Image 1 (tube, rainbow, N blue to C red):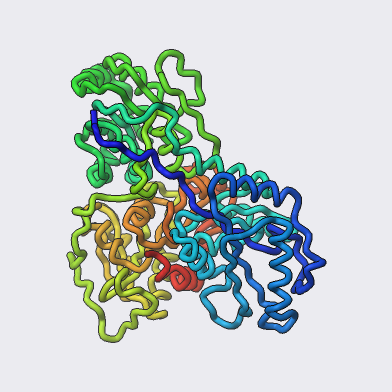
Image 2: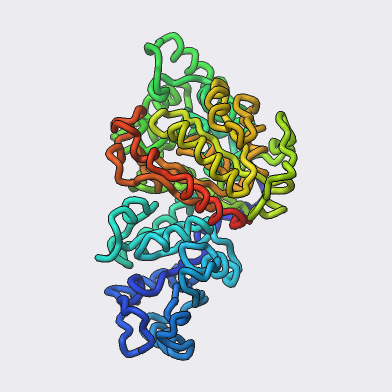
Length: 549
């Protein structure tokens, strides 16, 4: 057992940033009169609960009335003084005085005010939550890498509500959601116990990557971590910090195209698990999967303490039966299970996706990434995109329904190239024809030429990644690269969107495939993604390039 003291973590968030009009106070267009300020119902109580939890509060508000001359800066200060008189003090006020046509980087949906508020509060955007009532509030949150919660009003469009990663009915409910997520990673048990812990996550690359923070939490309190993974997630498991030994084994109740259950194979797996000699086991699953078949094998293998999330009654198969509300981001869902089992991230380890630093070798090749003399490289920070700087487009997906049509992706590449961006097209084994078609004459084709580690290195040097809801999106989050998410709504965006990294979501969030978990598109024409325009992709890349740090 480790003798050193391990910090018990510090929660998920440091600050909550609110839109002003329509969120904190009733919207009075171009209000310069403090007598017209009326807080929304329950605002003061909700804010006081957040303050009592140690969270700092701020306001991020577009005030184009200043630019248009509807009120003065003095009038606005009087309005804000009245808001603080009624709702209590705020730790930062961020105000955009510009109009839509001014081209500033602060007016929402641009992320400038969110980034500035985080900087003034001495934290990062990833440790902030933005609460607003319209889509541009949530887009600004995502583009900065912050969490976003939409509190709809009668002016909120249904598309905005459907696209938001999280929705609350009012400020009280938003505060409930924030505090529940903030506290969910605090361990229930007495603290690290050491010993040998087996963690299981049998699924694809993305599933393994989003479990990474929870595995690091277990590693912080255990003497050794052994990981059971499947063949589809092995390459990702090899990149995770904290794992000491890997066991690869396909599980027929997890794999999407399993063969018949082989009793002899299950006996061999049980024997292999017994050889591990684990003091305890933690079974990580997606929200639609059951941990109980593996829990039974672990029990037969002699593991004394088993923890898992299970809505089904587990009988004596689980010692720690954890439950998680629907809609929680998958990394936080896994972290909350680790906490329920008594393991938390150290205070100096942020709850972000992460890879072994040694796997991110410089991405010079296997095809030339040198700058073309005639290509402009705009809006890619030198220290992030590095010379030469580029945008990665990854058109493939492990699930057919989540892949954007190839002709659309080819149009994205052409549009980005025409806008002055260097474009690299990537693809996994067997996707060479797809990547070649998408790259055309405008992009550098690396399809089928990279291992997962090599792909991570290429994405790490990019200014942004344009990708569907598939493993490379989470790979980008693990290396801190912003993501333009071409997200088919077959699964909830709030659970499976890019985590704690700048993002912009594109695609129809109310398409007929919404929440079907369909592997093949059930709607003719794939309308959720086929309607994404090349111009919108360029605008999204413009918005997020340079926001990561």
